[in-house]
Amino acid sequence: MWKTANLAVFFIVSGFALVHMELDAEVKHSDLSGTWYNASRDVLEQELSGYLSEAEIEKPKGTIISVIAPHAGFSYSGKVAAYAFNAIRLKSPRTLIIVGFTHRKSYPDSVSVFTGSAFETPLGKALINKDVAQKLISFDPRIKDIPEAFDTENSVEMLVPFAQTALPETRIVLVAICDQGMGTSDVLAKALYEIMSEDESVMVVASTDMSHFLTHDEALKKDAFTINLLRTMDPEGFYRQSFKGNHQLMCGQGPVYAVMKASQMLGADGFSVLKYATSADVSGDRSRVVGYLSAVFFAAVDNIISGKFERKEKEKKMFNLDQKRTLLEIARNAINYYLKTGRKPEVVVDDDNLNLELGGFVTLHKSGSLRGCIGRMQGEGPFYRTVTDMSVAAAVEDPRFPKVRQEEMEDIDIEISALSPMQKIDDPSLIEMGKHGVMVRMGRRSGVYLPQVADETGWSRDEFMDSLCEQKAGIPKDAWKTGDADIYIYTAEVFGEKDILQESDH
Image (cartoon, rainbow, N blue to C red):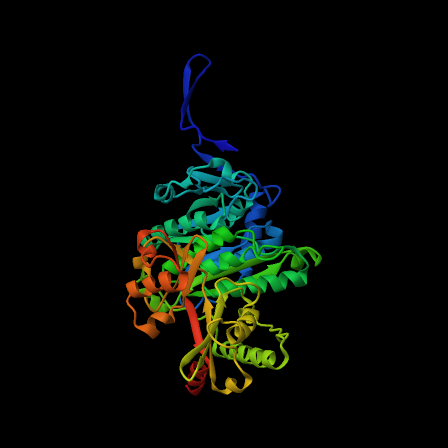
C-alpha cells in the first residue's frame, strides 16, 4: 500500500474551526508483515535482536566492502541474515543500499530504485536517502523509478526490518533488478561503484537465497560449488556458471554479480563466508530445501590507501600449486594412455576448482619448439576433463604436426592455459599485450591467439592483430581496425611442467 500525496489538507469543523493535517508523503507500507514475518513491533524487535545477539562473527582480514544476505521468512533465514548485518555494523554506514530483484515481475533492461521518502514496517519508518537514490537513477536510463517492482518483493522487504534493528541511524536505498541479465546487472555494478567510490559511508548488501528445492545433500554440494565460485572473485565467470545444469545456483545472481563487480572495482580481492545453513536446519525436512548464505567481500589492507578505496587490478590465481600439478599429471597421463590404448582415460577429480567450467588450451613443446596446441574457448564440462580432451587432441589431432609418438614423450613439455570468460570490446586500445588473449570473428571465420603469443614473438599490437586476422582467421588483416571483425579479449592462467618444478624448488 502506498501513500503518495504531498498535500496539506484542511477541514472545516462544525462550520467554524479550521484544522490542518499533513499526510504522510511517499511512504511505502509493508506487504509481508503478518505473513513472512511478525506484525507485532515488540515480537519482531525481540526476534531480530535475538538473532543479532547470537550471531558472533570474526572480522575478515581487511576492509569489508559489501555483504550478501538471504531473504526468506525470518524463521528460516533470520539466524543466517543476522551474520551479514553484524558485519555491516562493523562499518556503521550512514547509507545502506539494499540490492534485490523482482521475483514475480519483469521489466526488460531495467533496474528500479525506490524514490519515496520511507518504507514503513511494524518497526516504524525506515528513511530513504533520496539523494543517493536520485544519483543512481541519473547514472543510466535503464535505472529508473518503477514503484510496482517493490510490491510484495521479499528480496528487498525482508532486509528492511533487519536494517532498522541493526542500524537504527542508517538511511537506506532500495534497488530491485527487474531483468537479471548480465548487461543490466553490469550497469548497476558501475553505478554502485561510482556511488561508493565517492562516499565511503555508503555500503551495499546483495540479497539472494542459494539453491532451491534440492535434497539436503544435493543442496550442500551445489552451494559449496557456488561458494567456491564466489571465492575466485571472478564476476563474469560466476555469472556464466550461474545457469548451468537443471537448477541455477541461486535466485539472486544479478544482485550478487553487481555487488561483487562493484566491490572488485573498489579493490575487493577476498570473499569470506560468515554463515551458511539450509531450511532443513529449521524444518527438519531434508527432501526439498533452500540454502541460505551470509558472506562478505573485502579488500586486503594494502588495497586501501589513506582510508580511501583504490581500484587495484590484481592478478587472481585460479589454481594453487597442488592443483596445477594435478592438472599437468592428468594431461601427461591422458596422452600416454591414449598412445598405448587408443582411448582416453576415465578420470574423476573431487576438487571444486578443477570442476569449474573453463575454456582451456594444452600446448606441447619439444626441445623448445611447438609440437601441438589445441583448445576450446569456452568450458564444456569440468576443467580437468577439458584438459584430458585437449591434451590428447594436441598430441594427435593438430593438423600442423604429425601425431606424437610414444618415444617422443620424454622430450615433450606440457603447458596448460586456463581461460577467463571472453569480453567483447569495441576499442582495440584496450588490448594489453602479454596480458590479454584475443579472438577475432568475422562471419563464420574466427581466429585466436593466447596471451603468451605476444611475449614469444615480441610483436607490437598492430603486428599481433594483423597476424591474428590474416594468418589465423583468414580475413583481411585490417578487419580489426575497420570494425568488420568482432574482437573479444580474455586472460589466461598459464603454467607448465617447467614452471611447476621451479615453484616446487621455492
